Image (cartoon, rainbow, N blue to C red; front, side, top):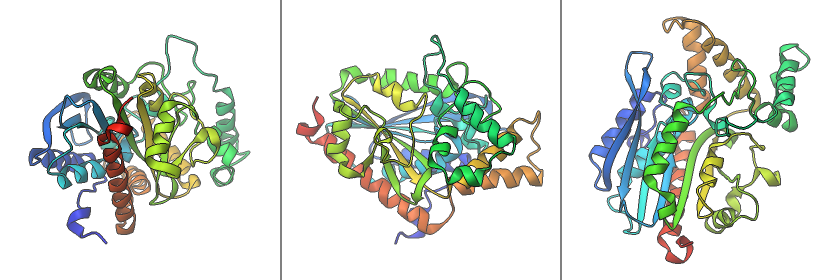
Length: 357
């Protein structure tokens, strides 16, 4: 059992999470520098929004561990807690490792308790080549139309794995339908690209990226998901480090199905020595997730949101409670698994045999 002081790293809200993260950075002995990217918009209380990037350890190290939180906005509370806990627990790092903590990469979504960004884009479906033909998402749109026409419902879809995977695959036709991948590179994607340019993956021996999410899978369990080609060097490295805890949508053994435009795919383009894993913490049912997402998207489509309105607050609190439950048991499970994964990652990167190309 963790003491309440240990679990205090959790916050459902962007402002509280950022305060805890920045405070941990300011008193850290391992963080060498903190940079931030200002978002063009402000939060619901007129607060400034930032993606903060903390660089810890040996910045010139050949092996890099990258921890990302908040790609899906409202899910940021989970990743932020793991990041703040990591900084607070470590007084020194192995000399051959650099750790880059990308905090709240979608700060607008975090602040507004939305999974999307300010343009209604699901950032984790946004990493496609917009100069080429967009992926065909006609079948996805047909599935959503079935729901709109009352021919099926979220309860039915939530129990049908194939239909659930289809609905969540991603689509590029309608910003008013969930999982919209956008028409151009989002602010968050552009920010990721800038950070990657600073990391310089081509100059490193090994880069391991852990992108922290929540919502899919068993309650409180942190599932490591690999979307690398099954026999690729990056995927083989993931299996070597984390063993059978790595699941693969391509093999059908993951809580996640195959998706379009994932964040993973951009990092995969950086080289075979880059391994990208999603650390997905389960919360509640697929039916509940589709319901809260649809309610939030309907709210987001309003010309002006009244933040004092009871219905607005009910919708936003439902989003926060689904993606970052304020339940001690869940928080303890998350923190234990988060610590376990990060320690295994650092052990592997600090091992010259495993860490080299």
